[in-house]
Amino acid sequence: MITSVEFRQLVWTSITNPADGAEEVMRLKPGREALWTGLLLMAALNTALLVLSNILIPGPWPLPGILANPLVYMGVVAGFLTVASWMVWWTGRLLGGQGSFEDILCALVWLQVLRVCVQVVATVLLMVSPLISGVFGVAAGVYGLYVGLHFINVAHRFYSLGRAALALVAAGLALVVAMSILLTMLGFPGVETANV
Image (tube, rainbow, N blue to C red):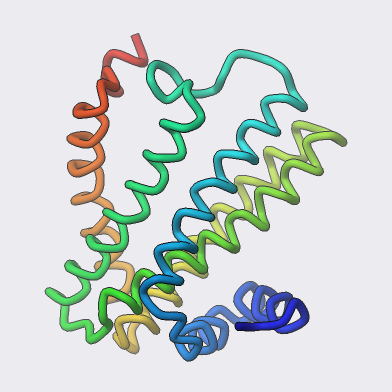
């Protein structure tokens, strides 16, 4: 268990020096039960922040079909994180990575913690200016990829950002297929239908 001061310091280190931040997160070894609890908590917070932003800027729910139900959306986020963790672990192992599934799950859950922090800032900025909030979100998303590469690199002990990037791309392609199947099973009409 870490203190609030240690938590803020770890968030700051993860943002300013992702490699060191990833090493510190890997040393926490929170345990499988804590990791799954953290994953569900991040899914809930992601959903809550989406609902809050929709309240602050009233309008149609930004997600169509069955995903208009926040509980379903939370379930999809949790499923996405679970499948993403497995895909990153599996593709990384194929590329010679040494990380365990728990290592990868730990890295992805912490990356979601950082994402929630970004969402909180973006939500606050939304009350000031939707444009500024949008620009901040895009910039944070791009930088988030850089941070994520370091976390995958450390979790899999690649010692190569190039191999981490390859694992991420391979996992992303596999994830698109897996999530398409999951959304179809949930009754979501699919990207093609939703965009018509």
